[in-house]
Length: 123
Image (cartoon, rainbow, N blue to C red; front, side, top):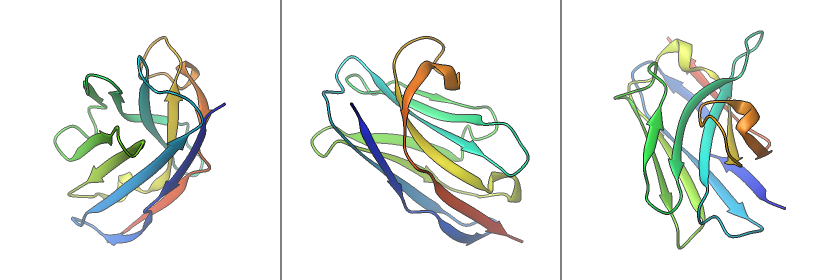
């Protein structure tokens, strides 16, 4: 069992920055990965970024490449998403998820999810 708790969401202006955190617990995360997804009202869940736990290899959606940075702190079992140059289309509820295998940008490849943290971008 894996428990994931996100935090750090809030209201930010266009062009601003926000850092999301995900506290992970419940099992060893070696040989796995963690991902961030987001979902805006009326839209499907969208892959944002992922990071392999041991080696720190990162993956990004094209829409956030160059603006967002995913990182992890293995000692603290934390995953972060640094979001810069935020746009109105970045507004969504962001979810941290535990990767179980398969396409790393597919939501079906993740079997544990946090409760989400909301990001609002004002223009």
